Amino acid sequence: MGSKGKNIPKYRTPFRPALEGVWQTIRRERNFRFHLFAAFCAVLLGFFFSLSKAEWIAVLFSIFGVFSMELMNTAVERTVDLADGRYHPLAKQAKDAAAAAVLMAAVLAAIIGCIVFLPKLLHLFEGAAF
Ligand SMILES: Nc1ncnc2c1ncn2[C@@H]1O[C@H](COP(=O)(O)OP(=O)(O)OP(=O)(O)O)[C@@H](O)[C@H]1O
Image 1: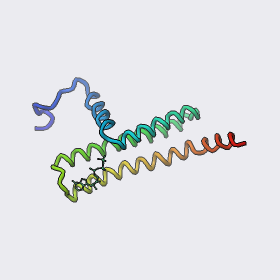
Image 2: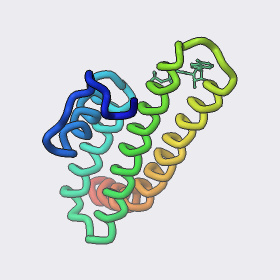
Image 3: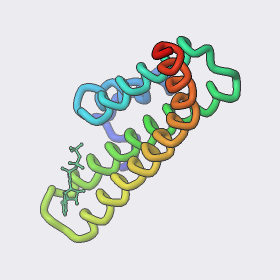
Image 4: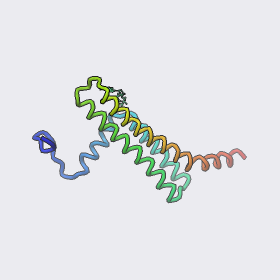
């Protein structure tokens, strides 16, 4: 029946279902809330250290990359669970691959975070120590 089914709500703007997807994921996924908190800390640190344009671009790419992967992971989990939730090797492969995509984005974000913030933090603590 596709998206023309009777019980599927019609949205006036294309943003509404997307925003609902973000809100539902925030409500239901603890990992997403953790990433949100980490992103908030990174942005605060970014303002504190007055990042350059290039540094902001790297940090924002990392943040939204992790958010996007986490949302896609949630989409895969929900879709697989729709199938009836019984154990299936293909379900395992799909969920594990989706989880791995989040891990890749998170590792990249952690590396970028270290490259951008670590020297600034070390400099700050060195200044405070002497
Ligand atoms: N139907 C299934 N068939 C086979 N393996 C599954 C199935 N459902 C889950 N798994 C395995 O269990 C793991 C955890 O699945 P689960 O659905 O609990 O997601 P999760 O990674 O714990 O995410 P969340 O905590 O956000 O729900 C999957 O990565 C997969 O290896």
